[in-house]
Length: 437
Length: 180
Image: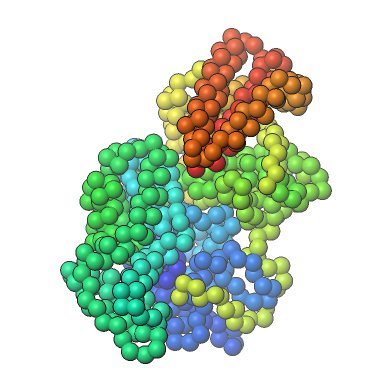
């Protein structure tokens, strides 16, 4: 049976599989869900016709409201639609999937994604991080060896990962990310610059759509016409050259590059020691972005595999590798430190950021105190799961970065904020903030 | 946010797990190579499609190997593992003995005060100098204690010295974070 590869994206979701020797995308759909009055759901383009729930991925681990379908249920609907389309394309049942996850996802978000897949009838055999999946897509074409960077600029997030392939293993050396920085910021910068020059106030939402179109046109041409609707009616028309665009988006891209430098410093690497830079995410198709990245790493970044599809293709390639037992074994690493909050505000560090997965830590816990698993560095750890136990507690993060807790070898039940305790037989629409629509 | 050092428990022989003699002075390349060779056999990717029980056993093995590598690659954690294996006094008496070491405690307080009183910008060079000095002392302390432990010593003195080194390391970590 084929193991499919899935990229559940913020805006678009894809399913892929290895066929005739190479990974191919089987289907793609907008990551949109609409709940109908009878409790059924519409997904993808059909959902967009009505009142759709968007941006599900960003809210996966948000607290669920009892009785309402939340982000996990919405994600499950998208995964179910992908599974059905994959079955139709392959002409066989699909029950197993490799699900790519953003490198910065914490264990709670990973657990929520696994739960959504379970609801969609999919067994998740592995959850590689997006950059690992992107690297595997390239590794499927030609053997990789050495140290790689994956520059992943999506609509709303940025991640830079450094990976090393040594013989039959691929290790994650460092990952840094910013979930408040993405391709959307480039569109915002372009709109702001044009509006400022003209002293005009634009109608922001449609203007951003036009700005993106112009940015994409500038991927192919040296100049493009931008036509922005103004707030009080009327239009702002300008011709923008690629040189002007470079100048306008430079500050946002400099923030990405600063993070790249920090990741290199973390891993004690010089740019010249990077074998190749793999591009992932729609925004990296832009020559402007490629030029900036190329200048930092002193080489031409690799975008031969469509950056909008490379993660899904790599997840499919990973599925094929798991079925064959190689050629590459993936060692992912924690992108955030994990700790245990014992009582209120007292945090015991368990596993530092960068720990190779799977990993575990033991801690002796007194009886009768509230226990929360937390993620994050330093002074601001955030809770992602709660449990009750006392004695010698063992916290284990599996190969996919999902947490489990045992005491004396017995599993301890974890409570996740996204899993409401009440039943969910009443199905109503649960609107999710459309901040990234 | 308040932080306490609840001691991570469980004496596990990470050295034996990787087939190594229990010593402070290790060849780190050899350590990494052994880890790799052993991990290859139980790697989660090779058991992703195995029956749950088999997958679980492989996962436990892989976790133990990764925990061993992470612990033994870190000189202080390696020392603490060694002391635990040699049944040096449990951490609690060592921490108590350290608490009785007024001179060391005073010195830590003075170091922290000196550091904090310096301006983030103007006092940067002086701050770096203090941090470098503490870092050097930590490194030298590790090497010296490591040599003593490798020569067979594992008593209360060694446990107290390890506790001192841990305090120095926490201080350095805090300074590093405030610089970032």
